[in-house]
Length: 177
Image (cartoon, rainbow, N blue to C red):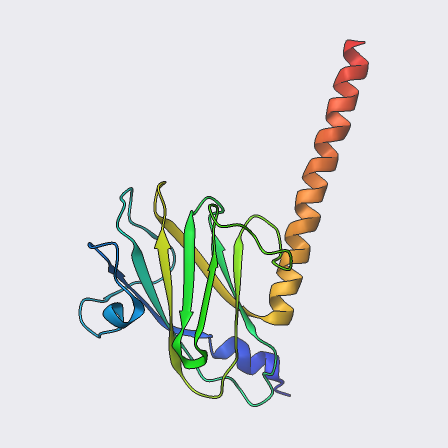
């Protein structure tokens, strides 16, 4: 039979991704949401170094009837300074980044995350990236349960690496002594 997971897998959350540079560095969402000047891309993207903010537009599909939990946008690498997510359909403006104080309820980790409502209609959400280091962007959208599983796997893998390092450090210390 066909279950909802099969349908979700065959209908990616992101229908398209495009980007636009903000040479002024001061553009607001209203300035950037015009249809002109957007360049389509797939996968991950790098813009090298520079001070101009980059805006990324994600066109998201409509949520399926049984999708009630939010979607999660995971952003890497973890050294990006300022990330601002704009979801005009719910008047959401959320910020995170290496230079932004993390909220107490924000999940930790080696990436940044945003919760995005699963709404019954197609819409655009915008991510503004500004950083002093290299402007590399890796993004992944996932339904909430899948994102939780991915986070647990990452945590277990990182825990394994730390435990292995401690064991080798202890064995090295014993050998040296």
